Image 1: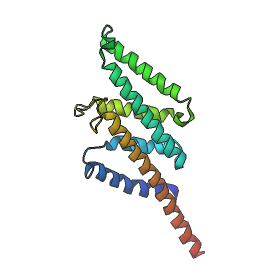
Image 2: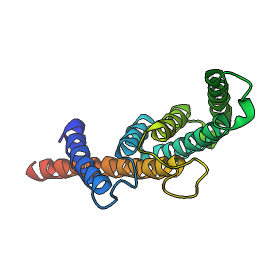
Image 3: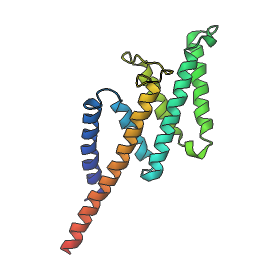
Image 4: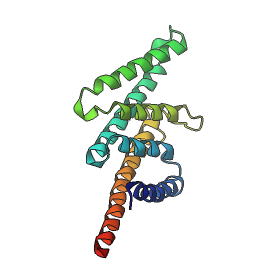
Length: 178
């Protein structure tokens, strides 16, 4: 079986399972779209155990930096500046912090940090998200995104393993016929 066919089967089946979990038993506690972003990030980061670690640490770091950025941006510290300017300044500092954090080898995956940052900000800006980035609950977009992305990265890891098994199964059948 070709790699693309094995991946199509693995990702298709596991994508359906993930969607069912997120929309069913997990009932809106996590964000399926963030899980799929992390799933893609896993493959973008090279897969295997290193890609899993890089994805989880990078997206989590980006989410935390986004949470701090959002908390500071909503504080009255910059009240003397025009609102857009204050928020832009906060985002600029948050982005610079992500790039500087990449100097630490465990957090070197800048794209993963950006995915975590952007997903957290997106979740926080959704009208249906009542939580605060300082709240210690599942209503906190930082917590929701980190957990969603961890699950998505794990689904990426499992999908790669299943695709490998599917490819291996095809090889064994072909070898048995020879």
